[in-house]
Structures are given as C-alpha cells and as structure tokens.
Image (cartoon, rainbow, N blue to C red; front, side, top):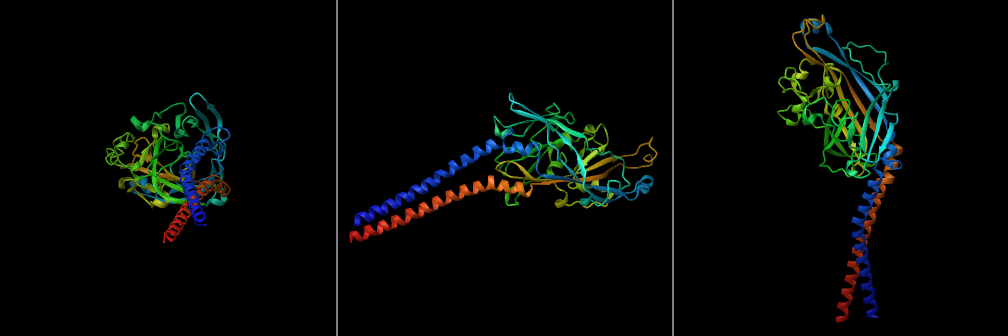
Amino acid sequence: MGCDRNCGLIAGAVIGAVLAVFGGILMPVGDMLIQKTIKKEVVLQEGTIAFKNWVKTGTEVYRQFWIFDVQNPQEVVVNSSKIKVKQRGPYTYRVRFLAKENITQDDEDNTVSFVQPNAAIFEPSLSVGTENDTFTVLNLAVAYNNTADGVYKVFNGKDDVSKVAIIDSYKGRKNLTYWPGHCDMINGTDAASFPPFVEKSRVLQFFSADICRSIYAIFGSEVDLKGIPVYRYILPANAFAAPAQNPDNECFCTEKIISNNCTSYGVLDIGKCKEGKPVYISLPHFLHASPDISEPIEGLSPNEEEHRTYLDIEPITGFTLQFAKRLQVNILVKPARKIEALKALKRHYIVPILWLNETGTIGDEKAEMFRNQVIGKIKLLGLVEMVLIGVGVAMFVAFMISYCACRSKNVK
C-alpha cells in the first residue's frame, strides 16, 4: 500500500514536471510560430493581411486646415511692423480614401511599385465655415484634387521581411536632387507601416513628399489604443535643430542670409522642390523654431500637444494604427524694389500662411479584428504557457512534498 502511494506521488510529480517543461518549451516555440505567422502576413503580396490594408486603407483620414488671417497688412507694407495674424479654422477635408493604382510586382528585386491618387472631400460638419470664406493672406495655391503622388517603388518583404515597405525609389530615383550629401537620400518607408518587431530603441525613418525630405521619429511612450498596446513615436526637436546642435542637418541649410549663417532653426527652405517658390515648411506656430523666426509675428501660440507630429505603431506587425501629421506652410517675404507692395520693406519675414493637421485612427471594426487575430492569440498563447508552467510547478512541488512526508513516516 505504501509503495502504491509513493509510486502515485512520484507519478504526479513527474506529470507536474512534464507540464512545466512543456510550458517552458512552448514559450520559444510559440514565439517562433508567432514570428513565422507575422512574417508571412506583413509581406506586401496578394492574399496577406498587410496587402489588403495597404492597397486601400480602411482608416478614415482627415486633413484640417487653419488659415492665418493677416490683421494689419497696410502697417506691414508701410512701416515694416510686426505682422499680426489670427488663426481661422479648421476647414476639414476627408483624404486618402482612394486605393493605390498601377500596382506592379517585380519578382526579380522583390519590390512593388504604385502611385497614390489624391482627392479631397470637404466636410462642412467638421469645419467652421465654407470653402468660399475669404482671408487676407499672401497668395499660395494649394492644389490637391486630381493629382497623384509617386511612382513609389517599395520592397515587398518576400525575401527579407526586415525591408518590407522600405522605399527603393521615388519617381524613378533613389535620391531627391534637392539637397546636397546625405540629406538628399530617400530613407525608410512612407510611414503607413514599418518592418515588424519594432523595439523601443529603433529609430523609425520615413520619407514625406509634403516636406521634400526624409525624417525620423523616436520612441516617446506606450499608449493603449482601443485595447491594442502601441508605441507612440514622435518627431524630436533635434530633427529641426541648427547644424551647431545637430551636425546631420548641415546639408539642409542651403543659404546663409535668411538662416543667419545657418544659426536659425525650425524652418526648412523647400523652394527647390516647389519650382523656385519661396516656400518654407515648419511645425505649426513655429514650434521648436528659433526666436528670430517667430519674433516678427504676433498671434502665435506654439503648443507641443496640439502641434507635434506622432505615429502610433503596433510593435509586433509594424503597422501604423494612428497618426497625426502636423506642419505649417510659410512664405518668405523680403524687400523688392520692382514690386510696389514690397519696395518699402526694411526687413524680411517668414510669414505663416496655413497649418494642417492630418489624422487617422484605426476604426472600431478593424481594431476588434486586430485584437482577435493578433493581440488575442498572443495573449492566449502566453496564458497557456503560464498556466502549464504554474500548474506543473505546483503539482511537482506538492507531490514531492507529499512523497517526502510519506517516506519520513515510513522510516519512523
């Protein structure tokens, strides 16, 4: 009888040990299975989850405009006074609702090319006025409808998932022809997605045609987005710093006068990619710009929360599930003898024309699908692993204690 009991206790301990070991083995095996599935589904080819959402996003994207209405144009023209502006807006448009076009897979170099058609639908219910409102601003044509961005050629990830969505060329070129040196490179993705398995230490590089350059974002914080854990990546102030603070920005300074010998910061002269027009890009309200840029302008209130750009990345897949792209369009105004309105000016101004806020968030239906198909399965696997290990260890310890107790009684 004692032998039977001891054998039963040993058998229970062995079963517990097996369960614990199986749970331990399941951890790397489970992680390997998850990685294998993710690597398959993020590839940009027909039939994958990534491809379906890449061709046409299911996220509703809105582009809001705030116009800077100049309050004292005559004072500025006559006395070179500070420019007083008042922000009007938002004027809201729905954008990025058209599917990519001319999608062509290249099996030789594992790339896929496409163009992104642009269209905009005015949303009166999300706007403060109509498209016919008038303002006192300097002329700047903002055309969006019936245009297209591209051709883009990106890696599809079939041979190397770590390159998926990274841009190989833009408009047939591997550089931009706007900037000297490394500033002219096309780096990273278009920010709609990134290669999977994103770690907080990774710097995310992406190209934006709106600002005619590549830029980068760094990890800022962890955020819960509709029950999905995401990493919030932000554009750091250092990305807009003067060359003295960030030597990598030296090749973005292409002239010495307006930039005060490259000591001014926070604005980018993109005239070369805008047919020579004196256009400057910045963050809204000259956020992170040097004081000399904003000093001649009254009525600005830069705010980090309202005016910064961020991307919310699901780290396992690398998908961007929420974003806010914010930038400001400015125009350089300086004395000009042959232009009546400008010949009396005694200084130059970088005048804010408008700023935009383009936002998109994963919809409730897609968020639920994402939770079920990705997050839910990973959590379930983790739970199974922990239960097996926990139950196994508990069984092993309990049966071994009972066995030792029985042996001790038998010895006595």
